[in-house]
Length: 150
Image 1 (cartoon, rainbow, N blue to C red):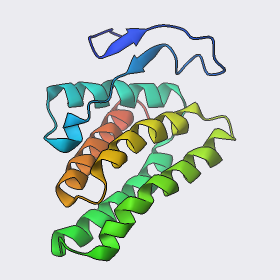
Image 2: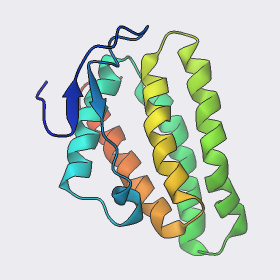
Image 3: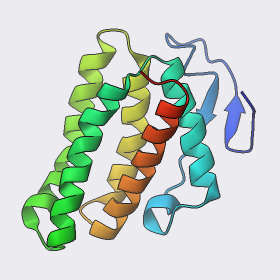
């Protein structure tokens, strides 16, 4: 795996050494302004890391499906309060799903939750930021699949 400016190699000795091989740097500007080449590089490396940590495509797709449903509601009505509330509820739903999967030994679910939670905190209920989040998440899913996600 290549090491770029977005990653720092280290080993912390914690209970999940596979996750601690490098630290992924999430950039809040990706949600606030726009995705750029560094966002794509992040999602590519992150997708690979999720595969290495045994996260399945179906685990990601379950949550991604909810994101897409909310995105469609907002597309038809940008002021849809049900959809805006749904966006806010994504954080606890993601935390719950990650906890369930981590109990079965899947470090990838915790990694996904950690980084998507950062993004969702920035998104709040803003529809423009949410659309950037959906694109960001779709890129993670695509690179996960390309790198052998099952």
